[in-house]
Image (cartoon, rainbow, N blue to C red; front, side):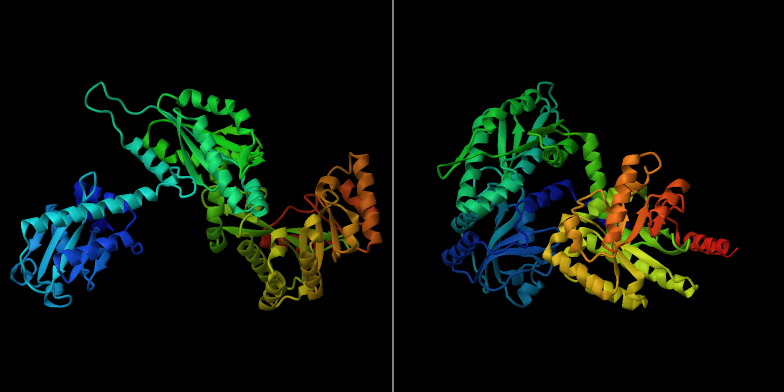
Amino acid sequence: MAEANAHALAVPEEELQRLAALHSLHLLDSGASEDLDNITRLCAGIFGVTGAYVSLIDAERQWVKSQSGPDMCAPSREQSFCHYTVAQRAVMVVEDAAADPRFAGNPMVTGAPHIRFYAGAPLITPDGHAIGALCVTATEARSFTPAQRRQLQQLAALAMSQMLLRRAVGRVDALTGMPNKYQLQEDLEALARLRVADDDTAATPGPRTLAYIDMPDANTAFEIASVLGMRVYDDLVRNVGARLQQMTAGRADVYHVTDARFALLSHEGHERDFAQQLRELTPALEQPVHSMTLPLNLPSYGGIVRVEAQREALLDAPRKAVAALHEAFTRQRRWADYDADADVRHQRSFRLLNDIPEAIQSEHGFQLAYQPKLDLKTDAYHGAEALLRWQHRELGAISPAEFIPLVERTALIRPVSDWVITAALKQMAAWRGEGMHLKLAINLSAPNFEEGDIVKRLERACIEADIAPAMVEIECTEGLWMQSPAVLKMLHEIRALGMGLALDDFGTGYSNFAYLQQVPASVVKIDQSLIRNLDASPRDRRIVQSLIALAKELDYRIVAEGVETAQTLQMIRDWGVDEAQGYYLARPLAPAAFANHVRSAATTMLQ
């Protein structure tokens, strides 16, 4: 590593700039270019040679972008003829490579393609960097006249123009003809490169304002494209871009970032008033936009950030504008200014999601805590609920209320749920080995029931841990999503497997009692928000008693969670609740503490 760093430090600044110019063209390791192929074929015909090439010189290699003739790519940069052309930044001619001490032993001379003659003209960027060469080769020694040198140099300039044109095309959106996100990035980088000049009359650019606007928003865009077709949608996007350009002419540059998202970068001197000007444009933005003569009202959301003329701030501006746009959409506001606090929250959420794979793999990442469930008929602990906990290596304890909703919105819900299932069943097997035969309730999220193989995974996990499915209860939050035919089928398959099925948070969510006849649940868990207030709230007591009566009519086992006082425990016992859990009985416990608690309770009963 130290040697690599030393090598990087040894690279001259001019070479670093040359490589940056080469990489900015995005040509390396790219596909064929018909325009460049036409030029190499033209060279082969004009000069009567066996090979013609557009050759690019990277840090350690030669890469041939276009060729007419046999393969010619040196094993290394140093063995490349074009390396020397780039170094001298002028037309280089080798009339007889076998007689030239630089190339006599070169493997491309002594072996295929048997180069004896070479002529190359450097490819010079507008900034003066030689990034490669247009070259011709032959298998016999020959001369090259001054007129031919000039021709080769002119053709090299043509090849360079084609590459620059490709770069420009890559920065213009094909649909709207407007600058795209790559051009925005380049413009911000160009601002970042500017420095205070030596004379006092020059100054760095002033602050800018960058705004991102979705017009229409993603949901509306999808509806328009699916209902009216892509021709109408494309025409609509073009018209939106044109309207934004007209509205901000002379005050900002407009970029078509992606789909129906546009960026507006204020001109220098307009940044202070630009945010207010955008808000004043709201009535104009609300006017219908015509597409194929069809007027459409388009909801739009925009995010605004004021950017200081500093490199880090300029290059981070698009991310901040997107964060502000997200805030506008979340709060359903037309415009939202960048909020550093909200951005911190979003970045934290992103970091948590990014760190979850590590939490799954690490021994000190995810952990399960177990909250005992007391059987109110026997006053014994026969089971528990497995609860996911996360002790982040740097951020400390992360509340499930924070990270689980994040996980449920991503594909991470599958590996996280698999980890919980595996860890819980493994712990059950360990307790069984200690003589403790306990049932466990495992929470699954609604997205888990969209996974077609969830039942097979549950069955396989039980087999691998040697746990009877009847010892496992799956908890899921009751709600409208359960009425899906596919979900109902999966719930029935879980019950057919022998597992219990508990409706969590019962009494506060969807609570359409009609669908209870379709859901094959065996347990209902009355939500803790109702149980906690039983001591003080007559209304909650009436609600809970009604829920208990309904559940008994439907032959459910009833669990009350959130039991925090002896009075509450006695009330639900009198009302016929089957099981209780809550802080009055025990908080969620680590495996060893849970086992001690259960054993201690059993000993007390025997006494």
